Every structure is written in C-alpha cells, then in structure tokens.
Image (tube, rainbow, N blue to C red; front, side):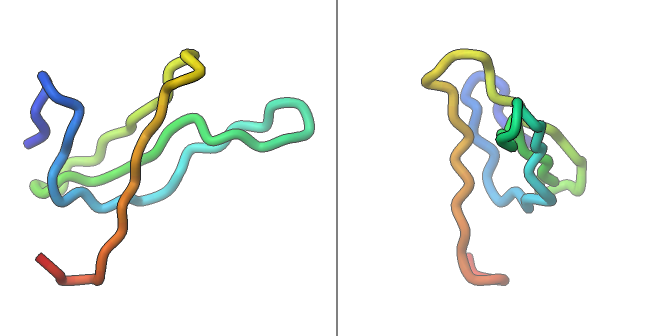
Amino acid sequence: MCDSSLPLCPRPHTSRPKIRAVGSRPRTIGVIYEDALGVKHTAYLTNDSKSEIIVLAGTIGSS
C-alpha cells in the first residue's frame, strides 16, 4: 500500500517508537506502524544526521 519510490504511506496507524539506549540517553531509532491494509512495517532512521521520520497526528476517525 505504501509507495516504494516515495517514502510516504497514507493513513498509517503508528503502534510505537523503537527506542535504544545510547549511553545514558534513550534514542529513537525508528517507528512501528500499520498501513491501510493492516500490514505492520518498521521504518528505521539511518546513521545520517539529517535522517528523520515525521509522524503527524489527527483526530481519530477524521479524513
């Protein structure tokens, strides 16, 4: 359901962030989400300092 040429997945449901302890600080390394077909995916950050995952929130049931 997600377009592989553009890392954008419409209407995903985020399950939880993936967090790893780096020294004494926790660091988010990715996010687990479910697409519109109910398939679970994991998106990971790269080691690039400009790597990001954008999670937006809206009202439940809004379109």
